[in-house]
Amino acid sequence: MAKRYAVLWFPFLLTDWYTKHNPSLADIPFVFAMLVRGRMCVSAVNPLAAQLGVVPNMVVADARAAIPRLEVLPDKPLRKEKLLQGIGLWCMRYTPIVSVDTGDFLILDITGCAHLWGGEKVYLQEIHRQIRQKAYEVRIGIASTIGAAWAIARYGQQDTIIPDNAQDQVLSTMPIACLRLESNLLERLKKLGFRTVASVTQIPSQVLKRRFGEDLTKRMAQALGKEEEYIAPLKPVIPYAERVPCLEPIKTAKGIEIAIEKLLVMLCKRLMNEGKGLRKAKLSCYRVDGKVRYIEIGTNRASAHAKHLLGLFKQKIPTIAPGLGIEIFVLEALKVEDAIPVQELLWNGEESLDNDALAELLDRFKGRDAACCINRFLPDEHYWPERSIRLAISLTEKRTTAWRTDRPRPTRLLNPPHPIEVSAPIPDYPPMLFRYKGEVHLIKKADGPERIEREWWIEQGEHRDYYYVEDNQGRRYWLFRLGHYQGDRSPNWYLHGFFA
Image 1: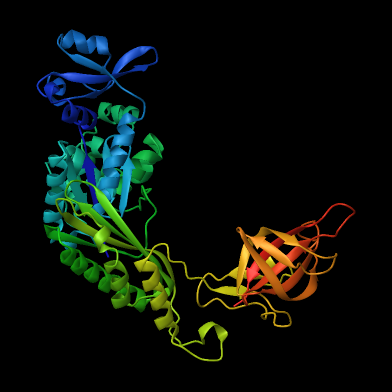
Image 2 (image 1 turned 120 degrees about the horizontal axis):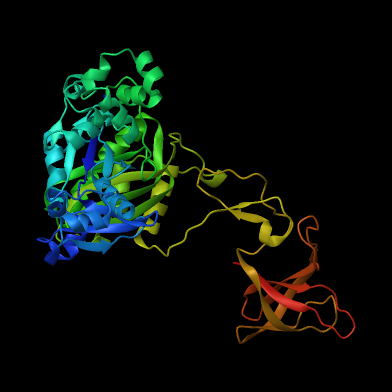
């Protein structure tokens, strides 16, 4: 697919932002100024000040001399950069790849995006309309190269689209400044009579490189599509993402569901074609008021089952506040894994079960109640009880060792163990009773002790003597004594688990 780029130029970015919040300055020439090498210099101008001849980098004293009624406001470092970055993040509703360029420019990689709006012309008009509604003046250029789009946005007519691979003809008549050259190099070229791009393209590149350095030939090659140019996105690009713009803002739950279903069909088709499934997905809902609402889902195993994933999203649709309406939906697969199409044994048991059905059931439980926690545990190669089991990451994870069956182990293990008060007749005997959470348990049956030493290669400390006890109501517990009786010192006792 041929690359296409849109470049947005904001000629009065900072002053437009300030005027938006201070409408009384709309009819007054004003500038922002900063201290530069001991002198106050203009950092940004509004349209009225620009019409009267004030330009950025002008000394404030000279600007005041030209316009006595000029309003001068103090600027702050990085204010404009932060503002431009914020607009760039907002533009991610139109494409996942947005970059901030030097000055007042944004670069959008719109490859494969414009058709969702009905073509580049409608796409450009929509972006322009939305930004103008936010009170910013903007000029947009679209072309096959970043350099050509930048040139047409900065020096061309308002909102121009250069057809695919037609940049040579369009750029030839444009001023040489459209090549994004340094000011000192630009002055040298102008002194030698180079005014347009065509005037330098007629000279062999080796001659230009020898006379003016590599920057000139590099910028020419990038603008004309002879050399690749790369940009740094504001956010990492999600490889698996789909977006749907809406003809009219969506306000109803049914409308949101239809949009999600359409996105899932497109995304799952891509995933299935590549033998993959998603484990985590995020839906971004861009509202007409500029705010964004998010919902996320997760799955226990890689899934490209659109119907199942839609069911998970439907559980969370009520949490979306559409406000005045949602105009763009973006679905991103945040975590993708290889899909396993074969049927496997359930947790390596003797009876088989369709793991897809089990995984989807667990997904629905978690989607219905965020606090719901259904975990799967596997045995681990440790003696110490807390380390003898581990939490499985997914249903497909296999155990590395066998379950221990030579000694009884509780169905529920407390981590950490809970301290208890006991009454024991003599050392090495189980207690006659113990108190846990204010309740006294009389012990009728007991077995033990089973001594478990600490894993000295991991930590130091006292051993544990475990007892399996049953109280007078038939409830069974796993208790342990920490260490030995030593003189007048009695060791501490703990409750570590419950048996079924």
